[in-house]
Length: 135
Image (cartoon, rainbow, N blue to C red; front, side, top):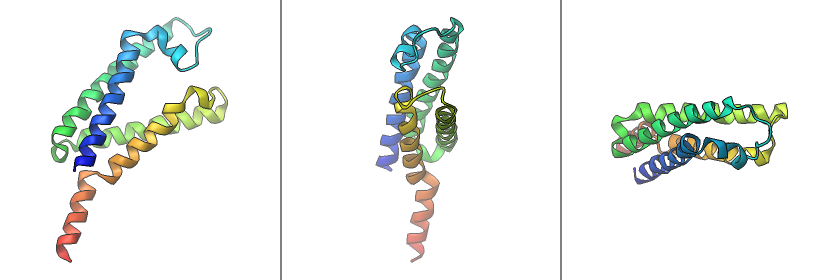
């Protein structure tokens, strides 16, 4: 359970980092992602809206870390979000609009978060414990 709590808190910190960046410093985000140069002004608006959601899920990860058994919705939706993020990143890479230098964290972090959340998922751990008890 400690590993799951650590993973949830780490995911929360990552969410807070990107949320704070996108909400409080949206003009710097394209440069940090190596996307600067000619983006339309409305991109800032999208970064702020996206950042708000990152902050919300950061809070959700810390809520889930306090009691993972009773906060499966936060855990499960984070898994789905990270899978969608990763698929979207791979799709953008295959289209050629982005390079690996633009998406370094987006190609690695979702896989790591999903793997950890699935591996230490409360239901999986509960089923494993039940199987051990039957032996």
